[in-house]
Image (cartoon, rainbow, N blue to C red; front, side, top):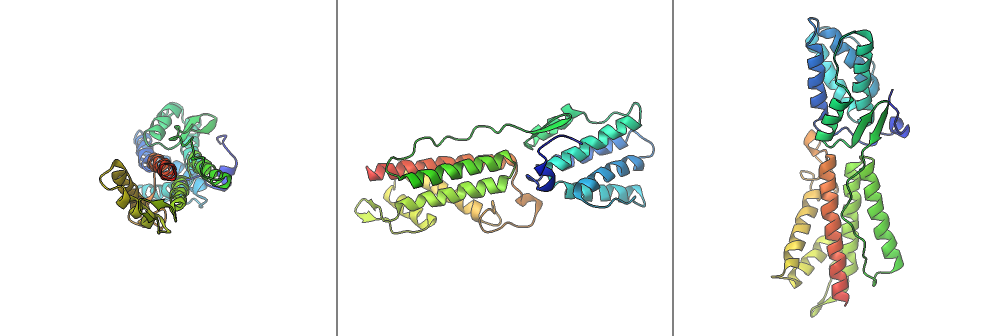
Length: 281
């Protein structure tokens, strides 16, 4: 067993990154391919992934069924990233102890694929660490015209989104920061701008009014990008973080996609706050 945050064994910090399952399945086939009888190796890995998935293990009737069952167990185990990594590593180490001369993927090779797919973990046997997240786009200066409660809400939400990313809870990270963008937009309600007043109560309406008042300026294009991203993330066939997502593997956010969305939305949030301060002045 690997050493990592014990709470991860009870509550998944997030699924393994998309692409890692296929990479590890290929490595298992290569290990098994070095033997005339491949089935015992497949069954060996099956047993570890069945445990990680919380499922009983039964020997399959043929090699084809064993490989099919292994794929199913790996997909199920993939719902918990740390347990998935542990199953793959521990199975390999057990093979080495039982079979002199067998070659299995070591920590360096495992880390190569984890890094390739931005899985968010680093293996340093006997430990598994959450990789240090890349720094987020800073939102350091908040308009002095906002009251203390507004400042607290903004900073708390920014911190919560960062914490979700660090724990590989990618969808929750994007949901939190998107909520903040929508919340920050409400500061414009009733605000005089030009010769009118902002009447909208929701993000899309407020953004539309701001865009009309900044026609022909850089701000018009920035607000257009902002609303396009908001619409994509809201759609079940897009990011699927507001109104549900389609039940397909492609709907699952990867860590690097989540970080991209979070950084973009943080930038747009700062832009809105800067616009608010400019209009107030």
